[in-house]
Image (cartoon, rainbow, N blue to C red; front, side, top):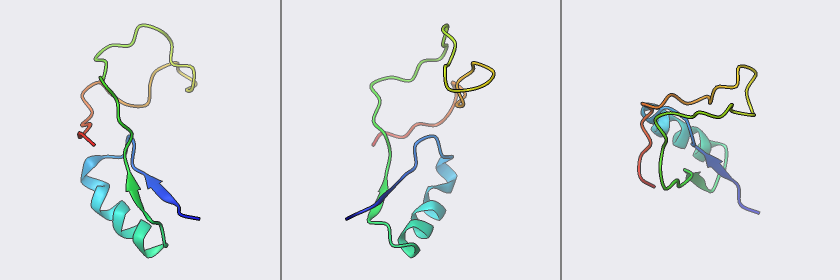
Length: 65
């Protein structure tokens, strides 16, 4: 079985550190999610947080996978 480490919503400046740690721990690789768009404003409440706000700010870097 192969395990991959997700880096979705991780700060981009931490990607190398995450990749090195994943390699040392025996992960097969790292991967990022692919989204068609990144909304600047979300009008509906985010269902997965206590304050109903998404965990990622609209100005987050989201590199093309």
